Image (tube, rainbow over all chains, first blue to last red; front, side, top):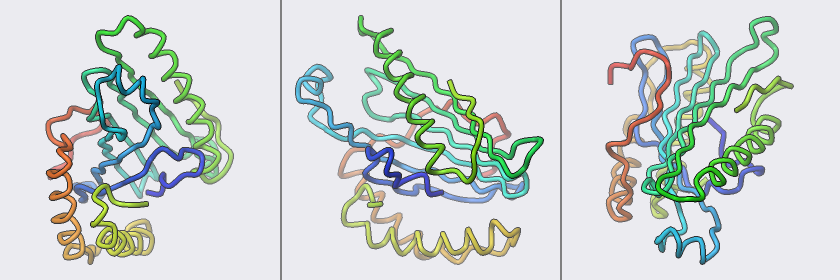
Length: 149
Length: 74
């Protein structure tokens, strides 16, 4: 529950819980709204046609205390005409060594209607891969093998 | 970490403290007793929903890739 604030990913500036509850299997579901500050230069904002400097992300997380798993799914809800980043992270104990946590991260990045699409998708993918490695060392308990992207 | 609605940050802190205590001391230890934070959450939510409307944040109607599990009963 304390993925943010994270000194290695200073972009998240606001977090709110929108909804939270237990399901019939005793797992805790939370829906959160995150606001992120990208520090976009003015020219990029002009291209995107936005005056807003913040983008918003909706996140659904599930904590399973019995299986010791946590799953996070997030997607951006602004700039959706331009790009869509759907991310899923799953933290679970290593099947052979429960002292170790495995993080699996997947992302589907779709850039819409822009000729730079494959360049931007590649850039986003590389950035997320780098961030996943940084994030793992600061948010998770012990050393872990990372299977990402 | 601040709230998305600046004026809601204090209410958020109150709720977060309540929730974090319940989460660490009860939930993770397998205690299924009722979480005591409903009232704090309600106050906090009123503020947040107002801020979301004011900032015109499109929280509804977004599809997730979704976890590969059964959907909960809400």
